[in-house]
Figure 1 (cartoon, rainbow, N blue to C red):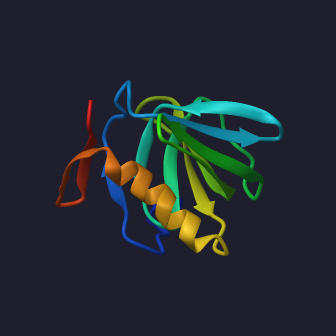
Figure 2: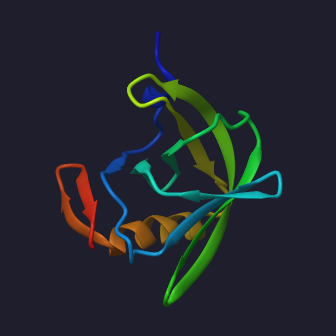
Length: 127
């Protein structure tokens, strides 16, 4: 059986921590905004995050990023959400709107801009 986290359509880049001054990531779903502080990996087609609660599969959401010189949002869809037994949080797969390819690339680059190390699929955001 293939788990949800193994159903990848593009290469993923692991992000191990978000620095305090790296900008703010938020997910707005059903008019409720959730700050995102733990991003597991990211690609130009989507992102995997940890959340305190499960999110309903198939739900539309807006993922946003704001830093000093940059503010952007992208339409997304919750693809899957499952309990991570290690820490009791929910791994959640989010797909960027495939029509917004330029914005998807810019969103990915917002993460990459802050990466301290871009080597062997392990990336650490600058502090």
